[in-house]
Length: 437
Image (cartoon, rainbow, N blue to C red; front, side, top):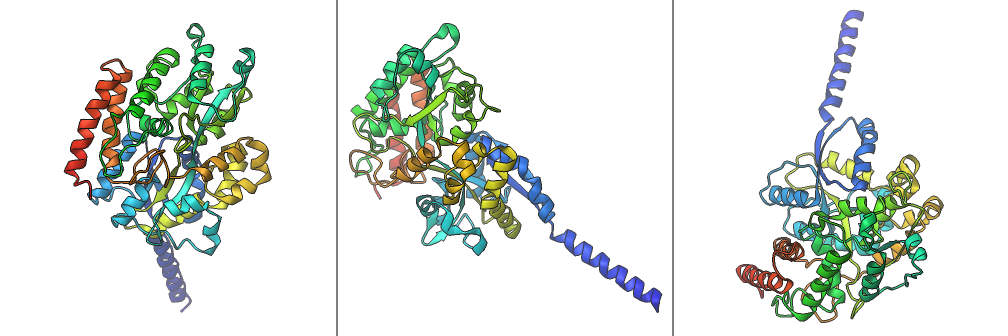
């Protein structure tokens, strides 16, 4: 009898173990190769240990990630269980029914702690389709030591004319010191993210109220001419290959006197472990020209679950872990407080450790909360979005325009020719898509 009981107990234990193993999932997560996501990948074994699940990581450059995710989700390919997507894609894909709602991560997740405008941008018809991993606006980083040595003073709100004047004075190509680093790599989320804000503040817009493209208008021509002239005179070589990561590397190694880009860079360029100039830099707001509207962008990188995934519960478990208050504290304790993901939770900005380590925190929070996607331009527009237009077609047309401008920057055509070509192509694409609707 004892032997029969032992066999039964052993069998039950075996079944229980098998059931536990059966519950373990292997998830594929696709993400962008930015520093915050590299930290998420580095710390993810903590979640794997807690849950018994395993993550397969697909880490890609921004343009490639967007292309692969868009193709997979539109065709219901099912390659990925968790996707890192932008504030542009989340509401569009949610509305199309391509994403699982993520409203049910539990009371302990504290949805009320998420910054309200960011959460609102990820919500469609009352349903939240992604949760923010980090959020950013844009600002101007600069080398205070170089400014002091040249007797220059950066104002609280620089104009593009002042930026040009500073860049001219601080460029010394014999030392590989460039007055200004800006994105030149073509792509709607690369060069056009920065240029979108420059065009806005120069008084330009993508479309008028009848959805007629405005790409070869006077404000566009002025903004892009100034951009091309600035980069040719005061920018680094090979600028058409430089996106966010490349410029961050240039700035962190002392090659840029100024850099206008994402506020999310602050945590890395202020980190002495990652930056050779961490103790020599300061920051101010993004530059303006004829209007402050749309001069700094509003962007979030978010975690979402495609409806094609069959591992929804395990995917939600990881997303909850990676965007929680506890994760923020873990990054602070293990990677340094300056490295915590910014712009998602109110509680992050209340942490004394973060306030002490991140002198830029209040400026970044203010920039994120003050960006107004509903009023991005001087003149009225039929769309929302600061550095993008929140329509499905923008991914294609933004990249078309970015390629034409990169061609002008490379000297392959004039600015006027590039914008005329872009205008014609966008008119064609919008007509094909049935605008005005």
